[in-house]
Amino acid sequence: MYDAVVLAYGAESDRYLGVPGEDLGGIYSAREFVWWYNGHPDCSNVSPDLKNTDTAVVLGQGNVALDVARILLRPINELETTDIAEHALTSLRESTIRKVYLVGRRGPVQAACTAKELREILGIKDLHVCIQKADLLTSAADEEELKKGRIQRRVYELFSKAATSHQQHDIVGQRELHFMFFRKPDRFLPSESGNTVSGVRLEKTCLKENGASGKQVAVGTGQFEDLKCGLVLKSVGYKSVPVDGLPFDEYRGVVPNMKGRVLSLDQAEHAIVEKGLYVTGWLKRGPTGIIATNLYCAEETVASILEDFKNGLLTPSSGSPKPGRQGLLQVLENKNARFVPFSGWEKIDTKERMEGELRNKPRKKITTWEELLLAVDG
Ligand code: NAP
Image 1: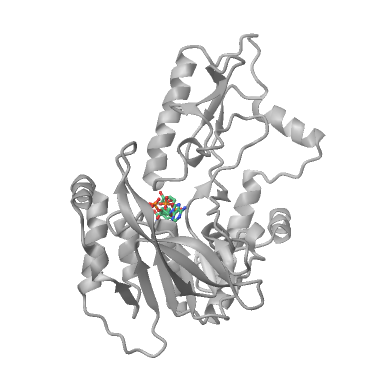
Image 2 (image 1 turned 60 degrees about the horizontal axis):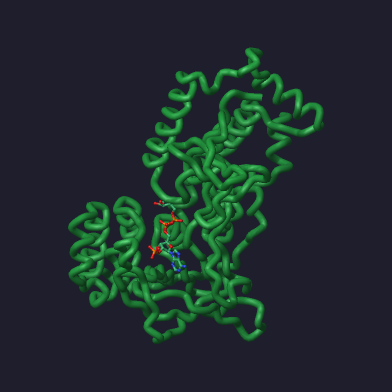
């Protein structure tokens, strides 16, 4: 249909931890939780129970981990004026969760979050932040890492400041945020009923330099401790999903590419360029980087498309132009497929904003496919 197609569908699945008990009730991936509070129709039924416990454990210390912890810890009156889904707001209003543990397998020097996001969570009103001062001790290898990484240095400084600053800790029902470093999940512990999670067994770790990557990696020490909780959010990274017939690197979870040009293997296992097919974003590099990283990534792919166009690689050899959008619409019609054009998305957007305005919020999310399609028809 087109001379060039760009795959930009991101990473909509989760990395699996692969530890016993991972399927117990009360354990969610951070992605499911984020989709739930953002009103994604596929997760409006997730409904995590926030009333059976006072403690939640978040595994991982990246920006997504900080995002989900922040939602659990922020005062409800601050969330009421955001575009958070109504069902999530109702649950959070009744939430009994007062303690959130953010657990990282490495130390504060290696935490995957960035400074702006860390500052935001540390700045939550009346929050008691707990960081063990002993965890802030640095090795020679840590000092090397800090010297090289500006972001890491700023993050580490924020942790150090939070660990030493005086905080008021006598407010009734005060919420607590505990940063736990050097701990990796060993197994999830079942409650008496056997169906839901009642805690996480953590193995203490130490850091060892990995010759191949030059990074410090977490190694188990054989010492364990149990952390009681009624909710676990696994925030250890997203994963892209393959599409039938497209090249996909299962190990790295990306579409193999050269500067955004999709590569496949010929019969002799040599990499060949899939003419006219490109990739960008998390599907191209893996699920890392902030919005700006994706801008640079997209620029690289666009540059490859322009170069191929200039070199005549995208011009149809037959000379007849590709049908483009008209051809695509024809296929959808032949298949009797329901689709939403951009004008339909605009109708959804207008309805959400109008309903939000009545409630003093940026928008009121529509959270079921049925209602979304009704808004398109309206
Ligand atoms: P991430 O930054 O890659 O963090 C993943 C975390 O999970 C790390 O702490 C990692 O520890 C840990 N982890 C991975 N595998 C593990 C395992 N098997 N056991 C224990 N811990 C494990 O991923 P993310 O938080 O999902 O974020 C994805 C990307 O989106 C990031 O680049 C992030 O910055 C970006 N993002 C940005 C914003 C924003 O700008 N506001 C918001 C959300 C997300 P190790 O470091 O030891 O591997």
